[in-house]
Length: 153
Image (cartoon, rainbow, N blue to C red; front, top):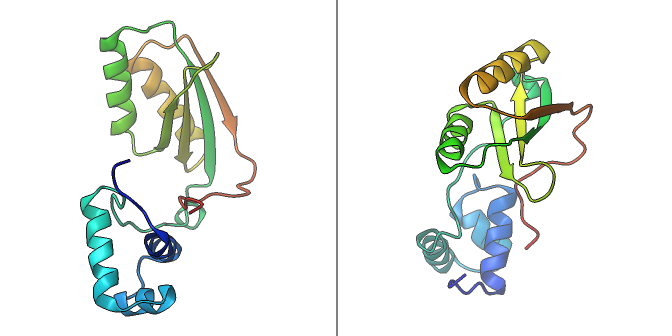
């Protein structure tokens, strides 16, 4: 990464990860600085792409999304056009919260958040109707022990 991050940047980023909804004054106080230098650093970090966006974390279960599946996908297809279709499908499906291409026996792992098993089945049926997949294994998360986007700065 070309952007140099110093101790003050790390304190600011940590404060933003904890609660980006706080006012600039509150963040400045928390990191031991004043408002203008903190604002300038945040602006620089945004322009450099270190801060990609700000968003809101919602409670999935409170909104009725009670089932979280980790889906292991194995494919025998490795052509570029298959991969483009598959990735486009994943990006278009809001239930797919995360998707990772892996090294090893499993090609992809997906984190899929849905209301229930019936909703997962609908997602699964749509997935296999759109692209050819060798094997799909779905693992139901029984309990979320730790989750969060925070990086250990």
